[in-house]
Image (cartoon, rainbow, N blue to C red; front, side, top):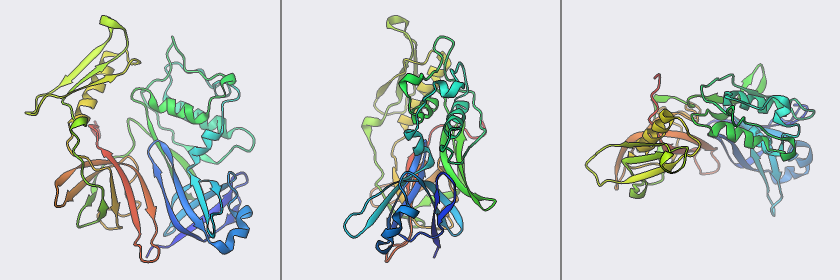
Length: 362
């Protein structure tokens, strides 16, 4: 049976507060373009140490499985409920929702014109952690992209009088056309828990031929495969910038022997014809996929060891039950690990989305 340990540290000094905090009813995990979360309950007889070991808003917490760090973040809430003491935490990037651009343009790093959004993400963290008592020790990947944020006509800027949340700047950087993706990762480096923001472009993850989720093998429970005709379309119209007859338009359509169904994408910020065509094709490919699996519960198995796959990976999913036979690729958008407790076996709940048409190595 895997061994678990939960460590807490002071967020400012980094000093260890608890090397092995006794927690029960634990579940935790990361997500795509988000901080992920942790829920747990502190042992009742240790409630008196709450202020020194799990001070909300000032304590880092790390989850370790078999000597490997799996997740880390900030404790935000610890409230007594009857005889229990629940704890709620979120990944390090949740801190950005409590920090604001008080100097404007991230302390003079902007405004941004045709800038790489990956740089904007790094600038956000540099601005955040460069101020007194604001350094979480988060390291950001040096990934670069060909995406652009801001234009000569409309530079991307944040004014000090608007007090823009730093989390919103990250969202803007990700939301640009062809923008990057990110997630969080923790690991032991030189005996210290490294906190890292992983940035991927053109996307995170890879197509994993060495990992699979299959009924009768490592899937313990699953949501049923859904077939939604309302979400299907083999004709997608992408409408870009402009007005009236001057509005840019791209149509991507195929005939597949099924009743013609259409969908329209409203993309008023896209001016490039090639970008609009790419959006139309990606939308059409996504809408032609029949059948989707949104979530599976896994047991630890050689087919997909816990920790062997990452947020962003495409994994082959094979589901065979009394209702359907499904065999296709799905993308991991997050996972939640629940350690064994009592009669309950260790489980990992994996959130999935339809795999896109990204060509690896292309």
